[in-house]
Length: 367
Image 1 (tube, rainbow, N blue to C red):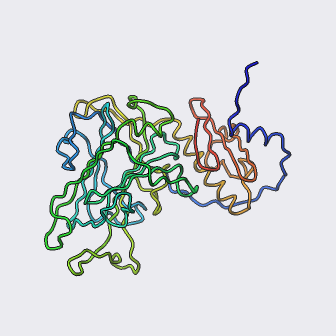
Image 2: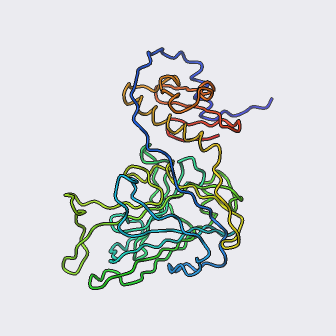
Image 3: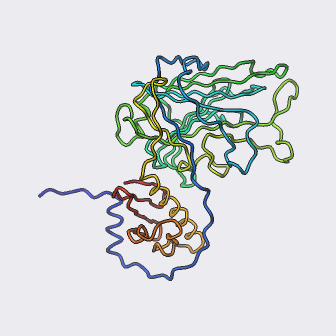
């Protein structure tokens, strides 16, 4: 007789079904408002030809720019002092990224690979190819080309495994400065970054996917630029507080704002859609996927479960306790399931196409 193996998740819920659950009274919790989801979008075309990774953006004319970066908190903060934009392209070998940052005073002093680059001005790339907020990649680089790459199993809110020793195998990266680095006596125009990441590396976090993305596939992506306010002392740039503030802190200018000073909220990152057209040889419009609305509803319910636990010491057992009708239609609430133990929960919700999506206590979302 054929025996079938049970996954850990299925086993957990099977045990739950066999265990009498305590009946607790639902408590009324006033849930916090959520930053609206309005991420930028981008269509990533095939590279129009060979791209030389030298930081100069020479071969990128046919590739469209992203929208300008904004403050990570969005409209709550003033617009960035200097313009930052990025570009993306791909071919059968991998994915290409480019960015240009206006900057009158280019400086960087760190030279050790995998040091904490954002302690100085830098440019950062964040990639969540599967869009489930787990198993995502981060890359940071300063104006000297010193870089830091790492893998995160989950966002920091979930106490993830952060692999600082993880490397983008086969990656190429370069910076180019229109001016001089670490020279306070002149005014620079800015600096550019180019990065190439092979598909073999990206496929490691793509749930078994091999090769290039299909036409219409989407990644979640964000970019960040860290900018410190400085003054010159003894010929060297030294960090000082932002004008009007007491403590030294950085500006965080990003492509997709998260509403708070925390870039590690992948659910707020931008959507990048792959096109089989070559850049400059036709255009495709971005097409939102129906399931993304369902995933965002689940994400808001996840936030509420965390708030409910913080307020009551346990997860909510019903959609009513989560006030799901604030988020979903009556028909959706009727089809929703909420399951919980003392330390776990799972919420399921059907999408418009009939597929069922789920989210758990770690914020992992899947179909």
